[in-house]
Length: 89
Image 1 (cartoon, one colour):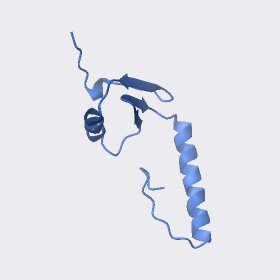
Image 2 (cartoon, one colour; image 1 turned 30 degrees about the horizontal axis):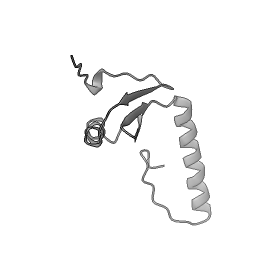
Image 3 (cartoon, helix red, strand yellow; image 1 turned 120 degrees about the vertical axis):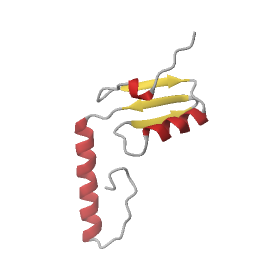
């Protein structure tokens, strides 16, 4: 018997991760499409293992702070940059 779960049924608490084995590349691409680009979870895929990790709020604040510092330094050095991250630094 095979059980099928919807992605909406999964809950990964902050600071935790979920590993899903035997995921092929096309399934991984479908999962990425379903989750969309604006997601809090971090997604990794290697050797048919999908990892969904939910960062702690503390890490997200630190990421934003580091991004702000980098933008200030680049502006002071008059270096143009184009940000492509989720939060567009």
